[in-house]
Length: 191
Image (cartoon, rainbow, N blue to C red; front, side, top):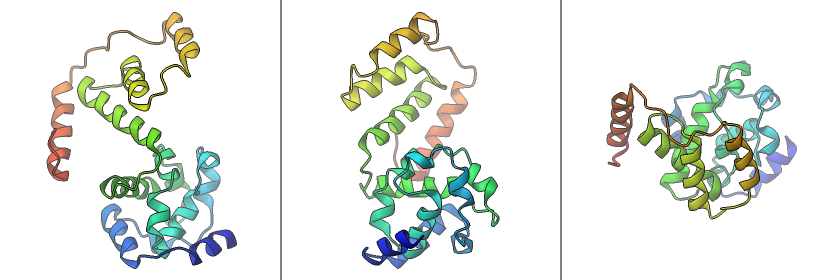
């Protein structure tokens, strides 16, 4: 905790940042008293540069550049374990979503490979209606430039029948298309 406080003292702070995040996620971030239950239960915390409890503290300080430039907000899978463990009922998955959204809006997303993966994942779901692993991997490999680093694993999975060449059809594709269209209208970005 002292490390977090020391880092926050050297940062440029933006008091309006906390208000913006709270407006977006509608979560009572001021109730966090740093019990660390969110971080201790997070399955991805060991891979994050900023743990969930630290993220909330940085938000409380208004450390906008540090939060929006963090890889931790992109590593979060929104499993909601943190929210279930929080004694104050803070849904940290919503907070992470708000941080990711602002990082993209303000072009502060520094974790390029993770951002590319998120975009490819959503595009695959938007066009296919569900996940199609080979399509996702192909697009990701082309966009990230990492064409051959997982090739051996991919071939093994394909040989075992774990990767389908053709995506399965989805009966509810029209509903998924409407969800993406409504979301694009709300955000002001048509696809």
